[in-house]
Image (cartoon, rainbow, N blue to C red):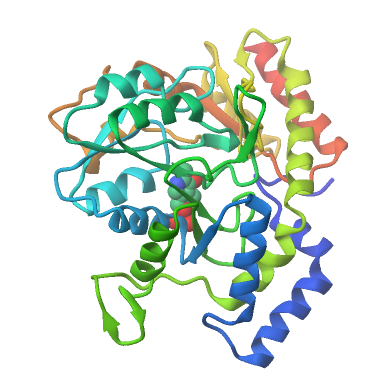
Length: 377
Ligand SMILES: *Cc1c(COP(=O)(O)O)cnc(C)c1O
C-alpha cells in the first residue's frame, strides 16, 4: 500500500502529467510569465464554470480577502463580522486594514456562521459579514443575505475551501459558492480543492463597478499604466500557475466526486460509533470535502493521533485554537468560554486523510484502525 498522506499531490499530478508538463513548457517557451494569455483564458474559463461575471485572479487567498476589503473602501474602525472558527487569514486581513474583527460562534453541526449570533453582533458600525465556507460546505447564505440586506451590509464569502460547491436556495435555484455575496475569495494553494503548483488566488463578483475597482487595486491602483488613482497592492496569478489551473479546472467536478466518495466511505464506517460525530451534510449546500472532520466524543485526541501515527495514518487538527484565544487576536472584548461551540470544536475535532487518489484498500486500512482505537478507548 502507498504511504498515506493527508493529500496526495504527486499521485494527482501523475494522472495529468503529460498535459501539465506540456502546458508549463509552453509558458516558458513563450516567456509570457506575467498577465499572459493563459491568465486571461483561465479567468474566462473560471467565470464560465462559476457562472459569475468577473473573476480577478490574484496572488493568494489572503490577498483576495484584503483586496476586496480595500476595494469596498472599508475604513479603520469599521466592524467586520466573521467566524471564530476559521483559518487565521480571514481575521488577519481585517486586523491589518485596521478594521475591527467582530468574532461570532459557529453552528455546531455545520461549523459555519451561526446566523442568530451574526444578527446579535450587528451594530451601527458594522459594514460587512465574512462567511467562511469551512471544510467544503457553504454557510447558510440565503439567511445571511437576508440579514445583510436588512442591515445594508456587504457579504464577502471566504470560499477558499469550497470552490465548486453548489448552494441550493429554497426556491430550487442554485449558485456556486462564492458567487452569492458582494464578492467571493478563493485560494489555489496546492492542497486546496483546486490547487496550483505554488501560490494563487482569485476574487469573484457580479458587480461590474466593484470588479473594475478590485482589478485596479490588485494592480497597484492603476487602470492605465503609470497612472495611480488609488493606493493598491501588487497581487498577480502568474501564467505558469494559470496554465496548470486551466487543466485542473476541467478535473474539478471529478475531484469533488472522488472526495465525496471517500467521505461516504468514512460516514458509513463511523456512523455506528457513539465516540464520534460524522460531518453533517447541510440540505442547502453541496459538500466538496476539503476536509473530512470528525468531532470526538469523550475520546483522548492526542492518544488517538499517536495511535494512528504508529500505523502510518496521519490526522490533523483544523483548528486547535479559536481565533479569540490566539495570542495575536486577544482582545478585552473576549474571554475563554465566550464561544462555546468553537471552543468545543477546537478541543475535539480531528481531520482524516481525504484526497482525490484514495483507493479502497487504504480506506479499509484507515477506518479499520480508527474503529479499533475507538472501540478500545
Ligand atoms: C487557505 C485559506 C485562506 C488563505 O489562502 P492562501 O492562498 O493560503 O492565502 C483563507 N481562508 C481560508 C478559509 C483558507 O482555508
